[in-house]
Amino acid sequence: MRGKGAGHLYGDEQVEVDRDLEALNRRLVAQTRRRRMAQVARQTLAGLWRRAVTFYWLVCLAVIGMGLNRAYPGPGQHLAWAFQDPALDLDAPFATCAQANANGYFNIPRASKAYLPAQDPDSSGRSCAPASGRMAELGWRLRTVEDRLFAPWWESGAVSGLARSKGGERPLPERRPTRRTP
Image 1 (cartoon, rainbow, N blue to C red):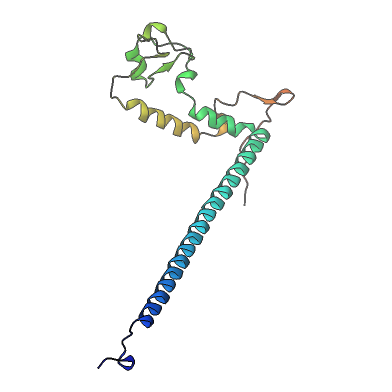
Image 2: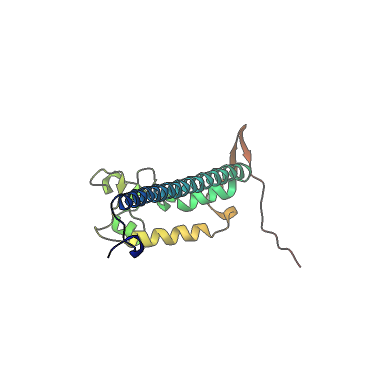
């Protein structure tokens, strides 16, 4: 015999329990959805905050760098000189491109004194182009940049003795390395 004591529900009682379970399920789904949306919102805000702080510090570093470059122009000029094309330092052109390539000069720009229009067959503004697929220029250029970066800035070709200031040109102070004895 089946009855209430046996754990089974009949008719209206079963319908009421099913309604309660559906309502509970809807509340749980809504609560889970709200929690997930709150978590996504927190993650998005945290990401935006990190980006804003990173941007702030990059702007601060740029402002400090510009101020230091204005106060001490020598190291900034040295850095620019280190990455400058070495062909711009040449005083005279090479007789042939083979001679230029043997000395490590490739793609000599039009702004260089070593540029010859006759050595630029495609009129690209760069004479003595290396053979296609040649990476020799890259290694040589990297060694040149490295040598220039680690040279003392007061001995570099970048510091010509004058620096631009707001009022015109002013001579740079003489800077020599000093040795301190302990």
